[in-house]
Image 1: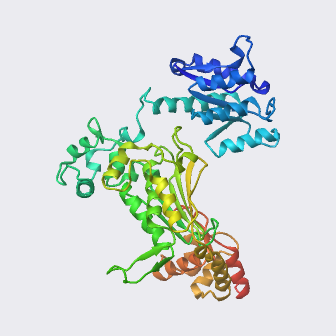
Image 2 (image 1 turned 60 degrees about the horizontal axis):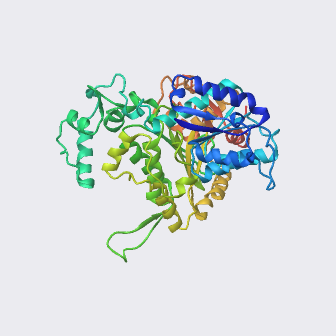
Image 3 (image 1 turned 135 degrees about the vertical axis):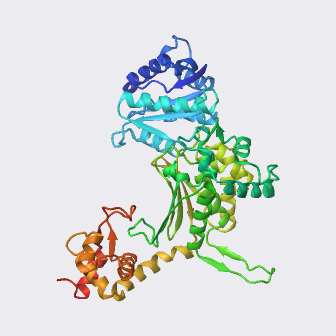
Length: 503
């Protein structure tokens, strides 16, 4: 049995603690694997209570903390039993599952609020208001732990069959490219002319007679037909904040190899670079303000380890001062944000995707990726990468050097200059005037200009004033939507006012 230490006595949480103990013991699945320790169940004995707490933490396999508003009794060092227990579980390397009652911290004891902040810097916390939310969250966490320990087997998502996909939906050409690369990089034994079914079976990419999700993501003709959110969204902002219209926005589709290559190319094409001389050899050295190996590692990790059951996509956002890579999913329970900065084992979220990426040297399996990123950034005089968990995603932040950050000031100057000197054609002026009162559809704009169809001049004019920031889409994430409308921006209104365009 796996022994759970349920955080010690807090009067405000007595009901939740006992109800959770009863729930775990009575559940048909959890009751087979877990037993819960409650302090109240210990018989009276001539022993200090705090020593009992810490001794039981060491005996248990998992620390499960439920934190409320109260901090609890404080010892001579000013620490409560709950605080001591958490620190001891941390010191001993026990898996820690933390659940916090309430979504606001205004009424919490200052020390409890500080403890919750400290916990948040180390691992993922879950909040709840009522007992049903708590039991649901605890159930999901304990089932995940059982799966990770191999005690139950529902199988990883990438190993499960892809509904409606057949071998006809996979590409023999993409497989042949992979086999050529794998033979060259790792001396992989399969030849490039290996039949598709044989190669997939060798890579464990079949579920019976059907390809699994990993097969579709690796070698599918159109993977997004089956897994819509597997695309990668890349955005480039001139400043330090998300602002619309987005100057450069691309949505990439294809296999995981395509997604990685396209996203890396997008970022590298936008970075500042310096070109050296041929003094050291025939090749001219090029250095980017972020190391290409670090950018590649961050994007590869996001695509390889993301949660493909999530409706969210990987997002790559380049700002004037940083690069952010958002990866849907969470860390395995055996890993913490702090552990990413130390040598650690590899915990691939999608092992059947990770293996082929390893074979073509897109990734390594030794768990050194984050350490390599840290060292390469330090070697180039950059801040260490930052890691955080936010809105159900793992976020990597790479800080650009001060020289790149000066683009923020250059952009502000450019925007001011553009507002005063933006060249506008007569067609563009009339489009702006048409959108003055209300957002307008493409049909409305064509009618106002006397056009029956979208001519080349109309398309160019519309694209120009959108890029100039004078006009914006009401649905920027769906540019071809039938409900798309165009509206003036504040910059567009100022332009009309300054140039006599207001009726």
